[in-house]
Amino acid sequence: MPTIAIKGMSCAHCTGSVTKLLSSMPGIANVSVTLTPGQATFDAGPDVDLTAVKNAIRKIGFEPQD
Image (cartoon, rainbow, N blue to C red; front, side, top):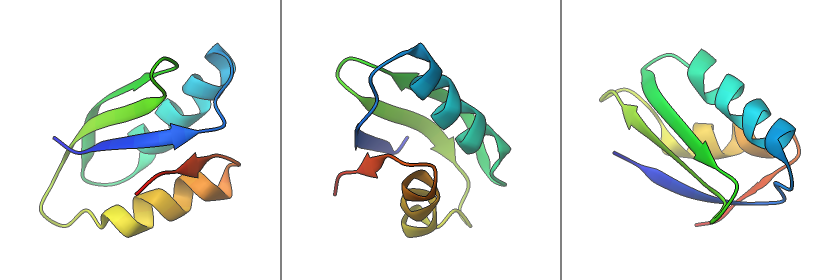
């Protein structure tokens, strides 16, 4: 279960945006995004590219941490 720390989320709308994005990506399920400590966890299939996931998070205005 990958966990990605995310900077820039400040409210429930932010976590909702990241949840919606991740839930719409192929191969990703059981998404949980928390404001504190600012992270997303999810189940990822074998074909999920975590770099692509992080790039998608950047595109909606947040900063995933490596």
